[in-house]
Amino acid sequence: MKKKAFAVLQTLVDFIFPRNCLGCESFLKFYEKHLCISCQIKMPLTSFHLIRENPLYEKINVQFESTAVTSLFFFQKEGAIAHMIHLFKYKGERKIGVFLGEWLANTLQESAFFKDIDGIVPVPLHPKKQKKRGYNQAEIVGATLSKKMGVPLYTEVLERIKNTTALALLGESARKNEVTNAFIQQQPFPTAPQHVLLIDDVLTTGATLAACASVLLKNSGLKISIAVLACRL
Image (tube, rainbow, N blue to C red; front, side, top):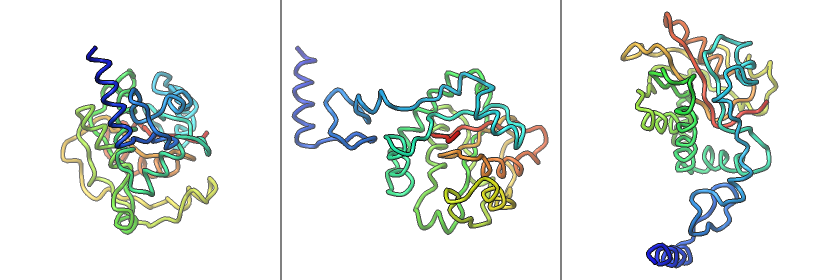
C-alpha cells in the first residue's frame, strides 16, 4: 500500500515538476532516475576496468608505460553519451559530471587494477579556457571519484601553460605536437603518492594524457593509471 501511494505521489510530482533524461531529454517516469530505461539499455559500456590489457591500455602503452587504463563508455558520435558529455563540457551541466563520476567510481571499485590508487590528478585546463568555461570538467569528475573512493585529489600539481587549439579538430600527429610542452608540474605533491590516477573526460589519441604523464613520471617511482568517461578507438 505504501509503495503504491509513493508511486502515485511521485507521478504527481513528476507531472508538476517533470524530470528529464540526461541522455535524450525525454520525461522520466517515477521509477527512472537520471536516465530513461531506453538510454540505460543503449549505454555503450566498455568493461575495460575488468581487463588489464584492453585495447585502450595497448593504445596508451605505446606512448608511455601505464599501470592500468579504463574508460566507462565507448564514445559514439550520435547517442546519449555524446549528448551528456556535450552538456557537461559546454552547457554548464555539472550534475552530469557528478553522475558519470559516481558511475565511474563504482566500476573502479570493482576492479583489482585500481585498488592501490592513492592520488587523483585531473587533466588541467589552461587558465583562460577555465575562466571562460567556469570550471574544469575533469576536476569535477576527479572530485567525485575522490569523495567516493576516499583518495586525495591534487588539482594544483599540474598546470597547463600552453593554450592549445581545439584538439578535436586535429589529427593524431597534430594533437601530439600541440600538447608537447603544454604542461608543467607547478608544485610537488603535498604527500608522496605511489599510484596516481589521471582523469579526463574523453580519450581520443591519448596525446594529452601522455603529455601529462611525461611530467608526472619525473617523480621517482610513481605509477600512473588512467580513467576517462569515454574513449574513441
